[in-house]
Length: 163
Ligand SMILES: CC(C)(COP(=O)(O)OP(=O)(O)OC[C@H]1O[C@@H](n2cnc3c(N)ncnc32)[C@H](O)[C@@H]1OP(=O)(O)O)[C@@H](O)C(=O)NCCC(=O)NCCS
Image (tube, helix red, strand yellow):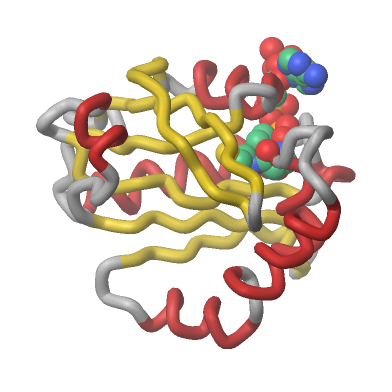
């Protein structure tokens, strides 16, 4: 599912080989097994009729990258590192349920704000994040294979709002 949905978040100019390499190196089953077991991460899924149709991943802690640290607030305590829904479920409640559960999970960990990076050309995701209270905080550089991409950094405060 990660392999199927990752290319949807990539800009059109990104070489398929770079996206494929990223999937092979970072989105394989062994890597996800480590993510699920990691104490500093939460992996969430949303199901329809018993089948997983989307997933998200939170990574707890302060941002490591200098450009992200410079962009986010002092409250930023988790990265929404992944948020993907299968295309046939876009525009349905699946993504809303996934985002709601993800923000609640971050709130349960006492996180004050969640940040994320989204490709500057990914207008659908940006609109989705804005609808869910994220606002643009800055930019960061992000490597996909050999291609250096520019992401917007967005942040959402949770205090009293995660439900
Ligand atoms: C991001 C994602 C989880 C959001 O789920 P979704 O079901 O598409 O979200 P919604 O339909 O609730 O919201 C998307 C909004 O963008 C709008 N939209 C759709 N296509 C758009 C486009 N090309 N440009 C701008 N807005 C667009 C939709 O109309 C909707 O707005 P509306 O509710 O005001 O009509 C889903 O699109 C997805 O998995 N995308 C592929 C992976 C991805 O990009 N993940 C994010 C990585 S950072």
